[in-house]
Amino acid sequence: MGKDNKVAREEEKMQGIISMTGLIAYLVASIEKMKDPRQPSPNTTYSLKDAVLGGFSLFLMQCESFLEHQRQLHSRNGRDNLQTLFGAIKIYFKRS
Image 1 (cartoon, rainbow, N blue to C red):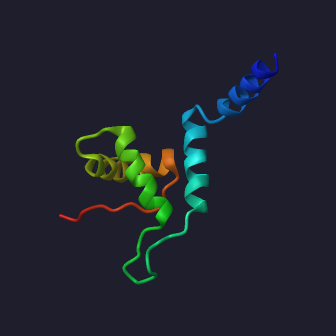
Image 2: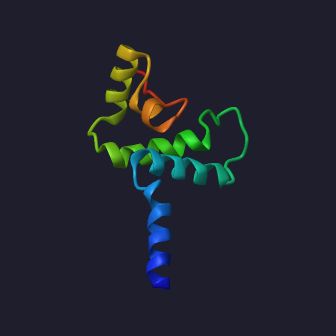
Image 3: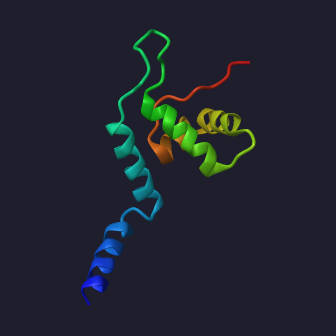
């Protein structure tokens, strides 16, 4: 009975994480605990949070041309998935 209660408590804790919102919140909280290994410089344009979330989003979205899709969304809507879903503030767009 004790083991079942422990498992039930663990499952309850995981319920908030096993959703897209919970997963992203957990990821953001983890990123915010990280020490940024980069040296401060004028070339450090993107926050560690934006860089990590951008990388994570590539795996999640599985889009052949992720940045082009985000650029099109941003030009049409003023926002893109990286901002809307992940809370990233700045993303890199390759200039033609």
